[in-house]
Image (cartoon, one colour):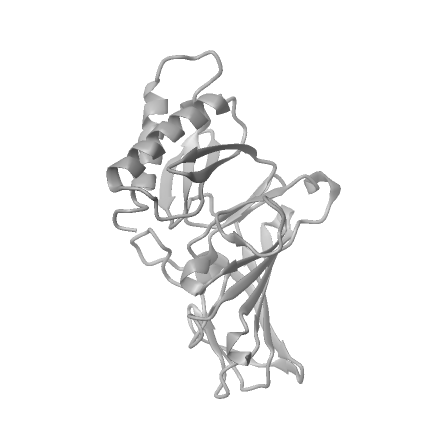
Length: 291
């Protein structure tokens, strides 16, 4: 049935050196009165009004009948003239926000939250969504992988390809990391957990995995099994100086100083590592509380 056709998105690291993602949004059956779309002024897990639409560099629309005129109604809402579907919107996003709530892209890695890059189709936010995450071009980035808790829909594990969400709210609650990240896995409460670690670091991944497994197992026992997700992902970006976290339904985005991560041959718990584990615990706790 046509009512079951999902909203189709495609996102490509278009020009990493210029921090530009290219995104397409295809709407099979646009509003006959003229389809409205917008970028949210909010992000799941954060509590301030944001202005993500300011990062839209250009936006155009087309349908089988040709170009479709687009009018900007306010700072984050656009209206397309009536047309026969499918309506395809193509736009670029400038991605150079290094916070856990933003989007960033360069030749070392990429990261985005759905609220930063995926247009919300007014009147169709309860429709299923499919996302084709494309790889960057260029040999220097040929080993990039994908880290996300979003459900795969044809993509290989940690691979580029198609992912899906049951509706727009779920779509924007699964951040995505792209790049040559370090990966560690463990199980807690019968659920697989991934550690996706990006950035220069000298971390002892085995110790980090063991400590996060202890932490997650404690939370699961505290709230009761089974945990409310099928898989969980810690998306960690290590930088020179930084601190921050944002919870999501099956993952968390963490920003930390690389010196706060445990190093090989270190057996003590430094103040920096204690701070990092406290941050990870705080965001994981939100899986049950507040989120």
